[in-house]
Length: 319
Image (cartoon, rainbow, N blue to C red):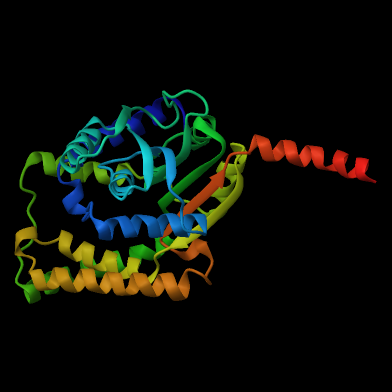
């Protein structure tokens, strides 16, 4: 996407995420504690196919309120952190959380396709649930490769799978059908938007997600930008159906009237099914059917490339 359409998408994303920034952590239950750090490390482990080592200088794209970066910093898993986002509101929320946690983070308000950093500035470029917002993915992937050092690592998680997203519409539609009966059962009234700003953010929500992906499309984006060792994995299947059913039900009710017991049931059930997906389904089923996709890849290592080129000459000399 280029020109006026790309600019429209950028403007909508800024407006939506600025408006959502204040309540974003509570809406998506984003925490910065030991449990959240374990969740982030688990995601990175799935994406990489191995437990991540301690990172050097990292750049998080579309950092939002800091889910990845602040949890990794808090646990000492990152030496130096930089975050980038197109939304000033999100960066302000992130900065407030970083100050409260006593963490140092450098930030830049910029587009992923035009990063204001020198070549080979980072050891890791990462992100969570951000690629599907970007209008020019080819340009963005080229930028990721440009700012990574030789042998640097790219890691993105939480990207909607095209087939998984279609499947998730089934529990969403089912929830809307049974919502009146559910509200009556739990004793909650129908939700009424409390103010104009909330309604405006809700109206923009359908327009900020501009992509869903197949594994082949993610692979093409990475290899087209010169990345190597591309790995695509899938995450969340049964837990996504369960989660979207419950989240859609809850969205129809006044938040303060949803019983605590229901919230505990929804969270516990989601975590049980998430563990089931992780242990029994994700290792064996094709990534394309899961709700989320994740991708990891590396930039070419100049030292390794030189060694490969020299090896035939050394072998010939030995003969």
